[in-house]
Structures are given as structure tokens and as C-alpha cells.
Length: 609
Image (cartoon, rainbow, N blue to C red; front, top):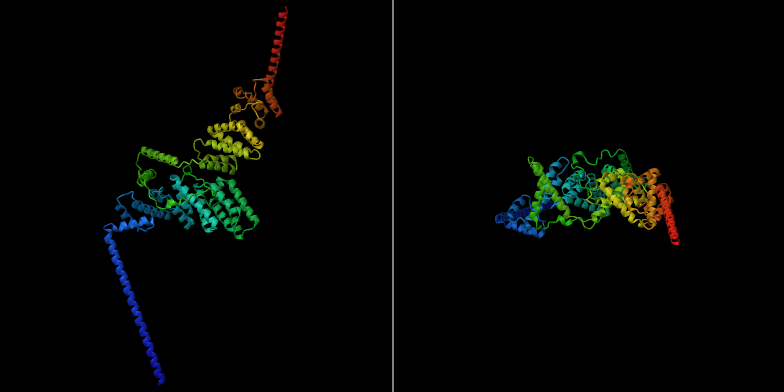
């Protein structure tokens, strides 16, 4: 009995506890429902209050005031932005400019994010419809972020940048600077993922010739100078992307890079996996980079003559212009918008006005050229940086070419301003003088330019005069190289022979340096033409007046000095006429002296008589 009573008591206690737990759960659910209903009523009242304020414009004004304080960071729903913009009466006000800035940012991001190889031709007109000059930093930022997120579409983004670069070069330059700075930062932080993505973007910009191939060679040199497994892997991927272009534009530079790869393989200090990658790259090179074309046919949208190539170096100091991403008040907002509208009509007007006359096209093209000239005048660099970059480009092009034909082809592709041809001639002569021994490569290159354009011939004539006037400043090896360079041009008739009129071969007018220069010049001419042909050329009656300064006949002293000089350098055969003239001059002098003596004697006899 006691056991049964105890069990009944325990069951009663359990039922009591169970009823208490059920009541507690029921009360908790009731409180939660009450709180949810209260929050729902509060949100409904707030929404009703907002809707009533929208009719008076108070809500929009408060949002705009908050927008001013936050600097453009406030989110505005897309469906609200078009309805808010017409309500602003002052189109040049801060509120309107911020709203248009947000709309521009969303539009550019949307277009860049949805571009692919199939719809790129449709995206480009829509992109040019946006103000890319105002949003150039937004476009660059959007392209870089999208490419980092989707490296497989890098060639598509590079093709998009190439098309924009033909119309707005400052946009392409800004993007190249930013991706270069991102690559530097990734290299310093040893961030392989970011470095690989940035290197791939630069490779495709080189393929599209938005970036010069020199930055590609600089990057490969940096990665392979002190090889690591990650660095070599990035370098292999980079060469696989742009090796086809480098093989055409700079085969000598690419050969040097592959020699470095071969040296890394021989050292054997890296992992086997990376060694297999290098061996695969050599196999890809033997197959002439099949399967890795520089530009896919559907992305080849820019003609070669329309593309603008930017010079960039990993060693240059660069500014990312981060302030261009942040909204700023533009005091000339309406004028700039109108100017871009006119420019947009110039770019897209042909497709929109298919039935226009040719005169409209001519006027639009003329406006575009005027605006481009104004833009060039506006951004003209007076610090000499452009000139230094031009000289560096010419120097690296000359030194990295395999033969003179390749160098001439590359140098002719460099767009020179009027008057900059002299810089090319000066750099060519400077490169020739820096060699330890003279290379015929420079003479052939100078000959090619003289034959192509008379402007280069005239500039090389000026270079001859300048070099001879400053010949005392040169070392003997430089003297020899410069003299042999000009001797090649004279021997091939690339340079007219009347330039020799500047040389006056007398003891007073020459120095030891100038005499060494003349010695190397004529000795090289005799080896190139032969003494017989050289003698015939120097005896040409049409050039007699130009050679009088080399073979002077004004006095016996200068004539004798010229004869002795050419005899001492082994070219006495070219002075035969001058020797005959000196003999005849001597006989005339003797005859005159005898006649004077005879007349003097006759006068004395007459006096005696």
C-alpha cells in the first residue's frame, strides 16, 4: 500500500510540473505575439507618416540633407532616384549632382558587370552614352574589381578598355596606372591571388596594345630576378597569356626571358611542380603559342592605327587619383555635361543619323579633332617627362630589337610630334657611340630612316655638324663609333657629301680629337668604297667647292698639311691632284722669284749705266 501511494504521489507531482511548463510556454508565446503585433503597428504608422511627407517633399529634402552630410554614402532605391531627380529645380545644385553621380556609378557598374564576348558590341554604345570623362575613375575601378572577381573574363574587360581608350585615352591611362599600383602592392604583400589577376590584366592590355610591351618585360624581369615558386608560377602564366604578342613585338626580349627560365630549370632550386610548368611553357613556345591567341577574333574590335599605346614602368612614381572616385562638387557641371553630350553625338552620331549627309560627318569629325587638340593642349606636360619617356622608349626599342628592320618597324610605329624626329636621330647616334665596338646595325638603321623620310636626313646632317663641333669631348672609342656611323651613311649616299664642307683640314682649325675623327671617317670610307671609288667621288666637279676645305689650296702650308695628313693615315693616293697642284705652285713661285731677280739685276745695271 505504501508503495502504491508513493507512486501515485510522484505521478501527481509530474503532472503538476508538466502543467506549469505548458502555462509558461503559453505565456511566453502570448508575449511574443504581442511584441510582434506592436512592432508591426509601429512600422505601419511610420510608413504612413513617410507616405504623407513624400507629397510635401519634406522626406526627400531630409534624405538629400543627409546625403550632403554623408558624402554620397546613403543608399537610394533605384525606383526612387528617377522620381527624385526631376523634383530638383536647380540642375547645377549639389543635390542634383550627387544624384546624377550615384546614377552614373550604378549604370557603369551594371554595364561592366554584364559584359561578355557575345554582347560587348551592344554594351559599348550604352557605355559611351554615360559620361565616361566624369566617371573615368568609376569605370577603372569597376573594371578592376570585376576582373579580380572573374579572371576568366579578363580578355573581355581588356577589349572593352581598348575600345574606350581609342576615344578617351585618359581613361585607359588611369586604368593602367591603377592596375600597375595594385600589382606592386600585391607583389610587396606576397599576395599570389591578387598578383596573378593583376598580371593577367596587364598581359591582355599588352595584347590589345593599350599598354606598351616594355612593362611586360619589366614585370617578367622582376619576377625572375630572384625566383620563388609563386613568382615563377605567375611569370609562366603571364608569358602564356601575352607570349604571342611579345614574340612579334620583341622577340629578342622574349628570348632573354626564356633563357632565364632555362637557367632556373638548370639550377633546380624550385619545386618539381613549377619545373613542369616551365617545361610546359617551352612546349607552348615551340608550338608558337597555339591555343593562346593574343586577341580572339570576336574581341578584335580596334584597328591598329586607332589604338593609343600608353607607356608605363614599374619603377615610375604613379598617382592612383583616388579622389576621382569620391563625389565632388563641379562648378561647371552644366557646361561639362553639355560638352560631353556633343562629344557623345560625335562618337555615336553615325549610327543614330544614318541618313545624314557627308558634310555633317565632316563637321563632327572636325569638332572631334578640335576637341582632341584642345585636350592635348590642356594636358601638355612642360616638365620634360614626356621627352624623357620618349627617349627611353626609343632607347629600349633600339636595344631590344634583333635586327635593323625590326627596329625600324617598331620606331616608325611611335607617334612623334612635329620636331621630335631630332630626338630619334640623337638617340640613334648616342646608342651607336655607347658600344664598345662599332656595330653595322646602327648604320643600316640610320640609312633606312634617311631613305624613308628626308626629315631624318636633314636631322642627321645637323647631328654631323654638332658632333664635329663637340668632338673634343668624346673618348677615342666614341670618336671611332661616331665616325664609322657617319662614314656608313656617306658611303651608301644616305647622307649627302656636302656635309664634309664643315670640316676644314688645317693645322690651326683642327685639334687632335678632330684629326682622329677625320682619320676614322676616311679610313672607313676607303674600306667601304675602295680607294679608287673614293678618289673618284672626291674628284667630282660638282662637289669641288665642298671639298676645298679638306684639300685647301689657299697657301702652300695648308696644302702641305693636308697632303701629309692623308699620307700618314695611308690614303696618300687621294691627294695626287693636290700634290700636282703643290708642285705647279712651287714651280710658279720659283719662276716668279727668278723673274723678280732678273728684273732686279736689270734695274741695278741701268743705275750703273
